[in-house]
Length: 255
Image (cartoon, rainbow, N blue to C red):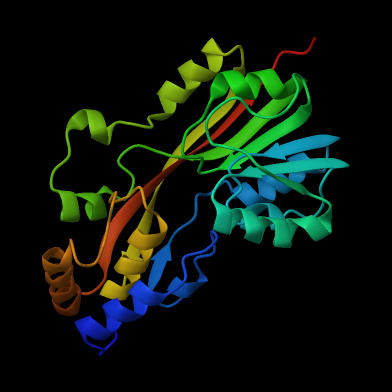
C-alpha cells in the first residue's frame, strides 16, 4: 500500500498519458485476472490459418501486435486519432494496413472480403456489417465486455443502476443478433474476473482511459467520492471489482 497522499496520487494519475490501449502504467497499482481462454493466443492460432483478416476497433494495435504471424491481407480499423496514429506506427511495419474507419456502419470494405474478422472489446457490434464483409465460410472471433462489468466502480460514482442497465451487453443478446444477421454462433463462453485497485491514482487513471465506465468522468466533478474511496482503500486495502467478458465465435455459411 502506498503512503503517498490523496492529492499527489490523483495529480499523478490525472497527468498521465492515456493514449492507446496499453495498461502498463497500472503495473503494481492494479490487477485484473484474465479469462481462461487466452484471447490473444487463440487469435494467433486462427490468423495462422487464413488468407485475409480484419481487426475492428483495434485501439492502439496492442493486441494485434502480439499475434505471431498475420495473413497476406491484414487490415485493422480505428477511429480515435491518437489510437489510430499509434496503431499505424505499431502495425505498419508488420504489413498490417490500419484504416481510419468510424465505429458506425458502413465498413469501407467490399462484400465477402475477409476470412477472419476479430475484435477485442468493441464499443458496439454491427452484426449485419460483419456478416456482409465476411467471406463465405469465414468467422468472427472476438472477446466482448459482458453485462454489469466493473459495476462496483460504476455504482460507487453513479449510484445503483437499473436492472436493464446492468443487463446490457448480455451474451445471449449477441447470440440472437448474430443469428439474425445470418451467422452461426459456434462458441460462446462467459467469465467474471477479479480486479483490484491498490490506490486512488489507479482508479483515476482507469476511469480516464476506459471512458465508458463513468461517462464524462473528471477529477473535479467526482472529487468527494474519490476522497471517500481513497479513505476506504487506505483503511481496508484494495478496492475489489469484477470485470465480465465473453468469447464469441460466429461463422458465415459457406457458399
